[in-house]
Length: 354
Image (cartoon, rainbow, N blue to C red; front, side, top):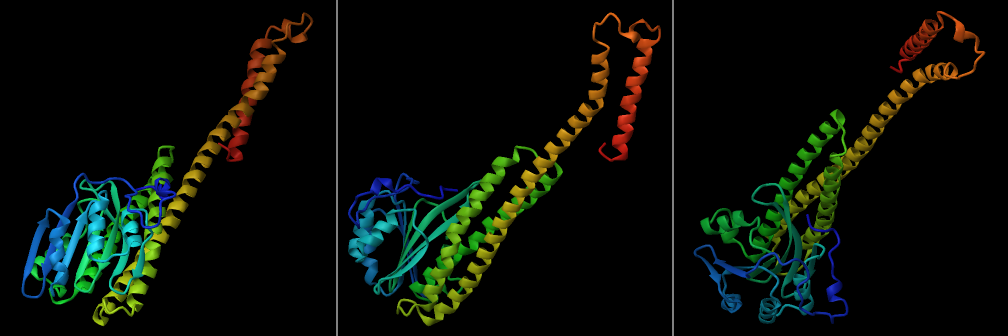
C-alpha cells in the first residue's frame, strides 16, 4: 500500500494550474491505447503520439483513450488543450494523491478513483489513481502504470458482450467505475482471510512476530477506508446529476454501483473493527503470558525465601550458636527446609496458583 499522506511539498508556491507530476514514477514509457466502437464496428490501436487520438473526438462512435504513465506533463497539456480541459483538472490528474471525487464542467465530467489490485504474485496490493474524463462521445482514462482491472471491459467491447457496444460513453464510464469497485471485494476477501488466520494464531500462540503483521493490516484497512468512503458521495452525485452527458438509462446502473459501494464500506468498517480487536487480543495475550511468567517466578521466590532465610541463619559464623554442636543438626535442618518447601507447594496447589 502507498503512504496514507502523499508528499506535495515540491509544488509548494507554484501557481494554480501548474502542470507538474507529483508522485512516484511507475512506468518508464507513456503508453497510449485507443478503442473506438459502436454497435456495428470496433477499432483498437496503440497510438505513438497523443495527436493520433484527436481525430476521434468528433466521430459519432464511442472512443476510449487510455493513457498509462503520468510523468510526462507535455502529453497531458496537449490532450487538455485539444479537449478543452481546465488547467486545474489537468493539475489534479498529475497530482496522484487526490481524494476520490466527481466534478461536472458541463462539456465534460471529471472523476477520480483509487484502483486497487494484487500484483502477479498475489501478495502485494497495487494502488494507483485513475482519472476519468467523460465527454459526449469519449472517455479519457489516465493511469499511473500499465496493468489494470479493465481487461474484462476490453473483452466485452471486443466481443460485443452485454450492452456496452449499444450504449454511449456514459455507460463506458459506468463500466470502468464498476470494474474498479468490484475489484475491491477481491482485496477485502483476502484481507478478511488474513485477519481470520491471524486471529486464530494469536489465540493459540501469541508472539512478538505478529506485531508487524497487525501494523500492516491496520495501514491497509486505513488506506482502504480513505479510498472507499468518498465513493458513496461520488456515485450519489453522478446518479443525481442533471448533466446531459449521463443518460437516465445509465443512472439505474449507477444505483447498483451505489449498493456495491455501501457493501464495500460496511466490509471495510468491519475489517477495521476486527483489526483493532486483533490488536487488543494480541496485547492482552502478551500481558497474560507475561503474568504467567511473573506468577511462576513469584511462586518459586515464595518457596525459596524461607529456605534462604534458614540457610542464612545457619550460615552465620558465631562461635556459641547452640545448634552448631548438635550431631543431627545438619540433617534436621534439611528436614525442616524440605518440609517447609513441600508445605508451600501443597498450599499453592490448594489455592490453584500452580
